[in-house]
Image (tube, rainbow, N blue to C red):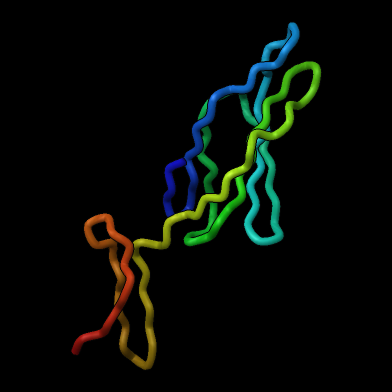
Length: 113
């Protein structure tokens, strides 16, 4: 998986059904806290879930579908989106802007006069 502040890009190996039916799609589920989302997509081995919240852990699961039904979900994984790289904070007339520092997470902040 590749993490951004608002998306997770996933890759997997397509499941193989025993029998005569080709895979017709995949089902991807993701949830954070007590919310759950599910999407049926075309058969593929990669997908990017978008519209996610920054710095949030999501439980992501994938299964395959064919004319005979749905496969069991592959083992689910927990992935955390990156934190926002640019944010502004304001307090008492003083404001500061945090920006990404060479691709590294910003772990501290300060205001200088």
